[in-house]
Every structure is written in structure tokens, then in C-alpha cells.
Image (cartoon, rainbow, N blue to C red; front, side, top):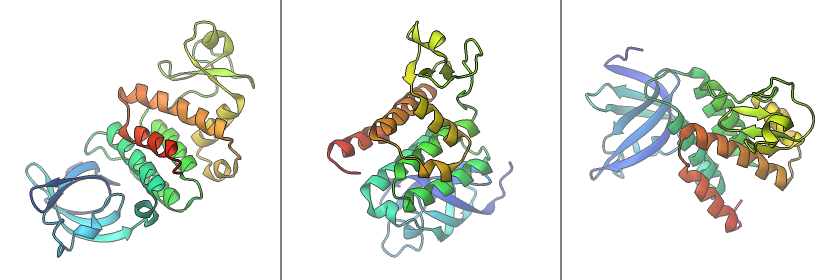
Length: 255
């Protein structure tokens, strides 16, 4: 959509990079303009009125001037601060994961209000839920669907047969489910347990209240993460840095 010279927007900070002695280049996700990059001049100075309002994962209401190369943040007001995302390293890393994933899945200035709303509610969940992990899995599944990569979880993608309550297979290249006959013999998919398939369907349906009440064993959590990680890596054609850091934290007993 056309952007006026001076505009206001709510925005969530996905990424920030220092520039020069005092400025920050921000990657923002907004409800109306999608993802955009902007510069916050002087934001690193102790006296800056912008500094604390454009921290990572902060939701702020911004006034922005249209620039030649980068837009310029001229005013800011905090809407949601999500304090635990800055105090708890495990939650912080999941927030990095969500932000990195969204940044890699989206192009600039493509409006997606529903995706913005999902990001907003996911940050709230990461900030407040007892376990941030299920909030991250929910975001992954929902975001994939909103961006055209919705995995098929009800029928075999090869023969069309309805999935039965047995061990099926998940194929990232195929885009979802394969029945035992189609996925097992040729080793084209990874085994997907009955319980993992049920949880993925709950997440895909957007029923977070049910998902958060499910008792997920460590093995089931690991299976869900492995399946979605493989699919995301296939879609993105790269590995996410935040995934490696999460693995490091777990090896060190954090989270």
C-alpha cells in the first residue's frame, strides 16, 4: 500500500543493528505495512527519548517519516514491554527464535494483519505462560499456514487416504503427511506418532487453550520440535541460528 511521508503505526521490534556511534537500524513488523526497516537516530545515547521504546520484542506506537533508503523513527510510545522476555534467558531465546523465523519467512511491506496479531499474542504467551515451548510450536504451525506453507495433516499426500490412528510419516518435501505404505517403504518421511499428529492438529486448528492443557512428555516435545524444525529448514532452505542457541541452553541445563 502507498505510504505517506509521515505516518503512525504500532510496531514490534524483530531485530536491531547498531550503526555509527549512536543510531540503531530496526527491523519492525507492523499491522498495516508488514515488515519494514527504519533507523532510530541517536537511540543509543543515554538521553535519547527513543532508546528504551525500541528495544527488541518491544511493542510500541511509532511516528515514522518516510526516508529515501530507510524510514526514520521520530517518536515512540511503549504499548507492551514484555519484561520477562528480557529477564529470562530461555524465554528471550524463544522470542529470538520467533523473531528470526518471522524475519526469514516474510518480505518487506507485505501487509498481514492476522500474522501481526499472531506475533502479538505469541509474545504475550512467551512472557506469561509457564512453558514458552508450546507457544513457540503454536506460532510455527500457525505462521506456516498464514504464509502459504500449511502442512497437510489429515490425508496422505501420495495416495489421498485419510490418516489412520497409527504411526504415519511426515515428509518436509511433500509438505505433510504420508501414510505407512507411502512413507515407510521408500524412507521418504520421518515417523510421526499418533500423539504428535494429534498435537499438531490442535495447534493447526488454533486451539491454544487445549494445547496448553495437554500433558506432553519430553519425548513428545522433542518429536514435535524435530518435525517442525525439519519442515521449517526445508521451507527456508537454511538453519536458524536461534535453534542452535536453544540446543546450547538445553545442554547447559537452562530451561
